[in-house]
Length: 80
Image (cartoon, rainbow, N blue to C red; front, side, top):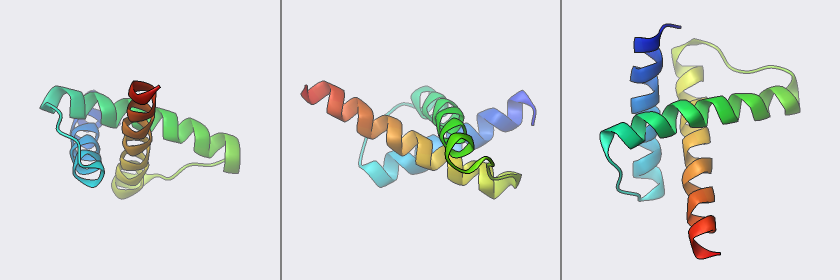
């Protein structure tokens, strides 16, 4: 996947995760959360199952899950 595809999927994943988690972030932070969340979630999936999801919807789902994990982790760190 190219850079533009990663940005589009990252932006969508970050925006959906923001809505799921009830957060309020900027577009740039949504893109970053989606891309970094996707990397983190893919790493975890590969460690646990040995494989990851492919295709647009697979990458979007992994990005959403990873972005939700990052938002939850940030909330826990702020409370501590």
